[in-house]
Image (cartoon, rainbow, N blue to C red; front, side, top):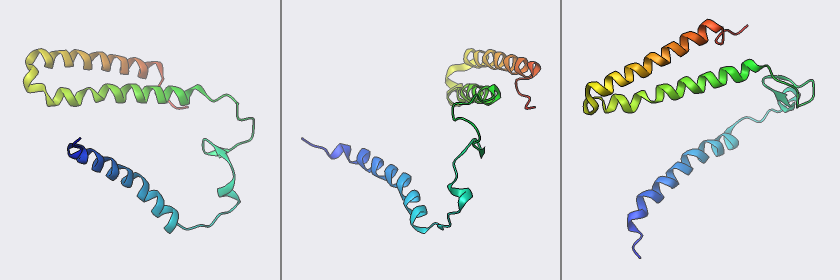
Length: 119
């Protein structure tokens, strides 16, 4: 059994693990350790916990997160389109223009409804 073709994959995994673990280990070993009461206290969403952990959150947190994910994923479709634009020609170009038009209409609707306003 010849495992030599798998050497680049193994090296890639090892480098990926090293890049993920090395900064954490360095921060743990070299970072300052000055604990105080504020650093050791539990908090939730940036403010001191004052009620039950199962309290209801404002729906705006979820709405902003969903809108961000939605538009982030929509924009992710532009990268493969831009790379293959020369091969797909005018049909691909106009298909993407229709897609972007629908995206702009949805964005304008959200803006008009006030979904992007943070009160």
